[in-house]
Amino acid sequence: MITVLLGVRALAGLTACFLSAFVLAQSPWIPRDLHDEGPSSAWHYLPQHGQAYDVAGNYRDDVYFHSVGTYPTIYGMKNNRIAICVPKPDPPSHANDSLFRVDFAFAGHAAHDAVPVFVEQTDRRYNFYEQYTPDGVIGVTGARRVVYPSVYDSIDVHLYSNKWGPKMYIVVRPGGNPEHIKTYGKGTIA
Image (cartoon, rainbow, N blue to C red; front, top):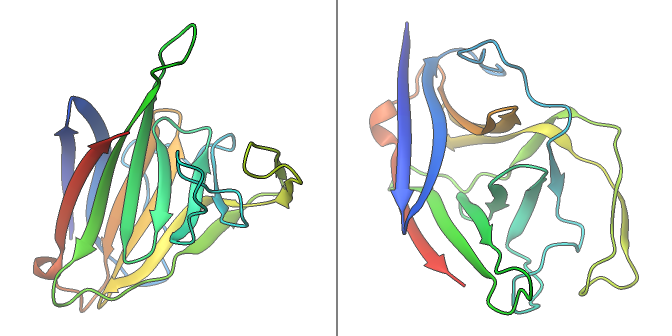
């Protein structure tokens, strides 16, 4: 039995589209994309190795991973949170650049604090020489897909991107109860 749910979320003028699929399956299992589109080999999810800072220059030790090349940028956070960030540049001076951020979290009494795992590893290496990493964070490799295993009993969350942008799949394995899935979101402008 397969039940598919399409969802669009809008917050603070920002529209983030995600394709969510609730699928009953056995673990481990990578769901088939509804349009047979595999993860992009150009857009990756990278583990935090000291390269993630906020706009004020504070190191973010609550970040597990972040996307590279996706629009919007996705940050996988502790406590089952996913941050969706979209820059709003102010060219040509960039004096008033801003950033829209929407946090999406899995919560509720049945939620477990899942630590994401990387699936479909890539060989591509990334080097970060940014304002807050002047000595560089080099040789970071990642994956084309990230899975938050057992966010709820027998329920996993998969994140990946294809040519259309980021996607989220909620995979309900045998024994999982979709009624346990509770989410909340909040947004900010920086």
